Image (tube, rainbow, N blue to C red; front, side, top):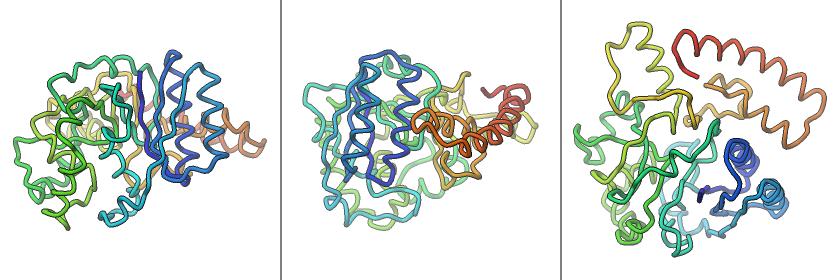
Length: 302
């Protein structure tokens, strides 16, 4: 199994937690690839020690952030680093034909084997329907020339078909799109990928990219405020990957998203935190436990 992350040093602390959540729930022998936009040696050693201790390997691939410094950044919580994945086919070894891409702001709660085994031979990528864009930002789709019949996907969890990426020359095509739509790419490379990959996306069960907006829509459905959910919003339980996209991240003290407590739990495993940190974690855990029980029995989300 091959897994790709993109990170700078600012996000390295959160990257470690995401990686630890993966190896806690998956078999040995994972090959991690990290597009490295300036991660400090100390943080790289920490990541390598954790990964190697679980019988897997990590490969840091240096990326020059200056390649993307002229690219638009219109939302403060979306890093410039995300553009680096547009060069996945260029930076990754030629013998890789597919790879799971994950944003740093994810936690994994179950095996990724089902995701890894998705057949993407006839697609450029597998990804999940983005209910936030589809239901709350539909005008944005129009601004980037996507029709109502084309479904916007979230790029935080994807399974790349690298053979098809190489054929398309994704990065060159991305440059053309940025020149064509200089002010419309609000969601950065996610918009670019949605335009380039239209009609070549395998839509996944949303259990593989469970986002805050998806939880809210399920809650609204159970409360009778939504008559139905789109077929592409299907979320089979249990959730495999929770994606804390948006301005509230799992590492924020006031974040109340699904299973967010596990971020602090995993961080404590890694850092062996102080007594004070453990007391704070217990308080957080009790609140999170109540939310988890409510989500499971009231909304069938777990």
